[in-house]
View 1: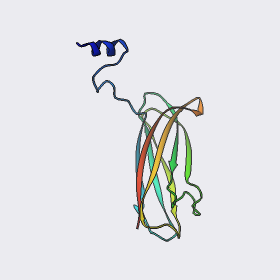
View 2: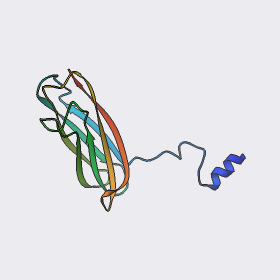
View 3: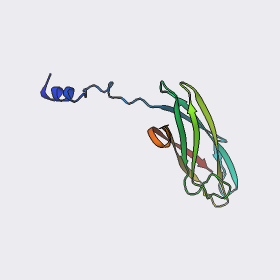
View 4: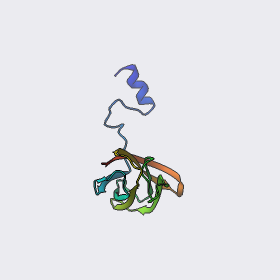
Length: 141
């Protein structure tokens, strides 16, 4: 045992990576229905987000979805961020959310990235315990 190991053990840290891994509070899975959108046309698809509680206690959770500039959460394309408050999620339970995504007549072809963040809260929605972030790509052809 070296000097560095002694210092790490005094402060409660260990050198092994298996013990220092962080446990995530949620499992996020996503799917798109239909898989892609048409360019330069008014159409929409559904982003289906499934959130599963991996903690050993009930969690209050919310989900925030951020859209790129050319797409939106309404048919006009003005809303670029959507927050969904899900309430309490029991142990090992999951909940699915459907978020409509709209393209308009000025949406060019390309690949667009959405960012999904799931938060666990305590007391109310202003106090955050932990979060999980995921990105999803949507093709517009």
